[in-house]
Image (cartoon, rainbow, N blue to C red; front, side, top):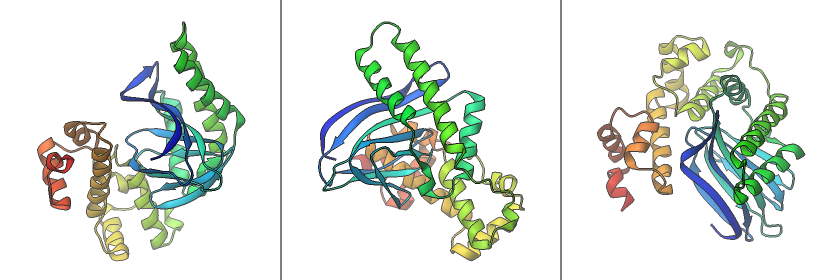
Length: 282
């Protein structure tokens, strides 16, 4: 990554502002054709707020062009990279977060479930741009009442997100109206965006209102791989990116990805990549 200017507040243990958890907040001015390498989002959301220039946000290998004024919402479980234009270098603010507010969390999950097109993750909202910028300035100064002001600011951002993105979502009334290929895509999308919360693949049966064995056979027949293989492969892809970031310890990665133990995680990782996580880091 190349940057002319970069301010980055990253918290390996999220900073807690009442019911909002701050993971990362900052600003980046890219050099021409700069690339922010692919990285995995753990169980958090992220706003990429373009303040100037042009570029592309690539999520799960799908590229979406962005320019000044655009705000891109990334979901938990995303594989995410950013490319800057050569002629008009990208400048953007970023805000990574999670919330414990049950109502807001449910509304965000609704947005994830009903935003299937990556291009529909982009909105324009001056209030969000201003609020994220103000939050960066406030965190920089760290003056009296900083904690209270930031919490109020973050809460406003979340409500603006809900207002902006819920109007863009398309409710899927019944998965039974989808073709087999479309249903397989919906299943992949659900796994990709819930890999940090899925405890058992049987949850797919409840989500899609089909018997699990039916979904399993359908998925295998149309994709050539089993549901379990797809889930475990995507989970290890996320693990590899998290290791590459060098922000979390191996046991922490195993825990957030739902492995029963660091040993089982290490064994699965070695089977796919030919090296244990510990040796891979070297």
